[in-house]
Image (tube, rainbow, N blue to C red; front, side, top):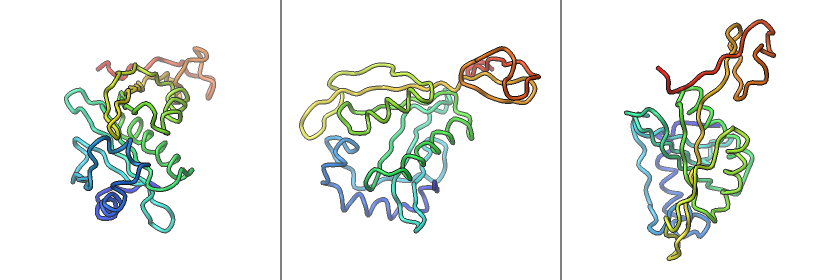
Length: 193
């Protein structure tokens, strides 16, 4: 379940301090580990959530940085505090849905260091949600004294919407809405004002 990160700031930072040298976190930290995450008091420039389980234990952290003049997410950071789990994966999907549909960000851009174990899941996620791999920057990230490439992903919040019932689909299957059968599917461009 997603919760505001400010409520769990102390727990997040205790975890980071205890695990600063954990090799599993090397791709998240990069060459110079942080022992503290600063949680903002608002969602203006950073949107920060945590993944918590039924016992209210923190299982992960999610951050999206927002380019406010352009009004899109220009970076994401996600860290799983435990072993890979469906809870974290579901919360990551909920986080992206929050960005895309709750606060209606027209575009989400994020990077992954090539070689990070999560890279394959990001490739799959990007394909499933209709995003694309923009490209790879060579020798961009230093991890444990070794240079790695950085891969950039992009997802545009463009869709077709029914003029009658409001049904939304990423791709147009037909001109007529398959949900209600009454409306016309019209393209929604998130960058048109």
